[in-house]
Length: 218
Image 1: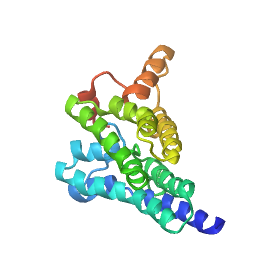
Image 2: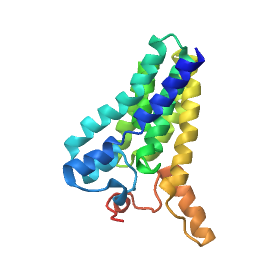
Image 3: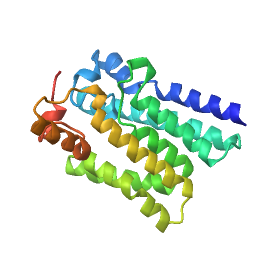
């Protein structure tokens, strides 16, 4: 069963690399999302800079592109670990897409797809945190809190143990992505560099003002 697992994981990465948010920017508004706001190829940037209605097909596709290989892994009897690995591979493709020079999104939508297949209550848990962040006007810290606390929720609800491993992988990937920030350069001044890294870690941005960050033009 090694070969089917490898094919599934590699295929999941390639599917995950399809940059739906970037394509929406190009097709709907003729822009490169990497030159706007946070510079990430993400649903939030589609919402801010392309068209709000476009978030829905983009978000559904990004959820689906990880949900599909996760589901296929389970249906083929490859086991929970392989199924989750396929979902994580799609997530990695989303964050570091082959087709865009490895500059992509944050991976939350694909992770939602994997969680939806593995444990729908975990999907609802994460959506609740995203909703709180949306209404408070700053989703990044709430998204991170939801991910960090997902294993606690999973334990209380007696969910599948594999979800804890998926959550741990997602937290690590999320922090790497925030700090790496699509290779966005850091300030030369060491004090300011530390401040920027801390902002990236907790708030997924380089400056204090969330709105100014969203409104940027590179």
